Length: 354
Image (cartoon, rainbow, N blue to C red; front, top):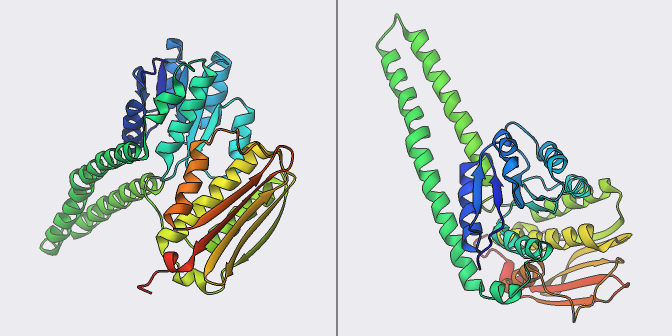
């Protein structure tokens, strides 16, 4: 596929730019321009881009500020916000202000980019052979794209550690060694060592923040679920009932399993918030005999399960459940909401090393 729409990619993080740029090129973007600040973006709006992939947190502007300026310049420009902010009130506000879509940075970000690309091309009227083109990107091909991008990012990390942080630590060590043998200048040398160490700490902190959204972070499943529920309750969009009973199980779940289960819930909840117009939602995570049972239901618009295209988000949920050797059932119909039921064998998600 050759996507000729003029596309801007705006992010001040070179690691993220590498990841996004390679994936966008791999799925067909041939007219792609990268910018590293909001100022650069605004200076180039007169090039009339069709699509802008925009990081929410730039050093000089917020995504909301830039979205407003872009829409004032040309309301027809499609703006996709990419953010590490999981707060749904931010997403809803940006969508209400004209953003085409809002993507949360996570380990499935390449799939999200592919999904929003499909919607963008449909919106732009480029429908010819679209489904056939996207079907060519098999799971195996998509995995290769992700691995290639990750390898490229790892090389960037290696260079950053060696060329920058390693040099700072080496310089600090040198000042400490000099201070040991120089009574007259000891205070100055120690102060210089401290200053350089603080620079190193700052660099490592920045690097860690950048990597947080790219690599899997071990989480406490129960705590993460309650944080998610707390965020939803603050939105006052719909009422929530929940039954989360992991007892002592969470101490024995592997980090990978906790991460996958949370991502399942996160994707389901995102779909409810964005599309369902539900007034009530029920969330359940309980143990039943030798299984972990997951249920999420809403009373929203629902959909025709047989005739609705299964998007990458839908497929991602099914794949995560299948990867945990679980089974699932979806009950949905127009006007009657949607219910997801998943059953995952405990034998597949327990960390046997504990």
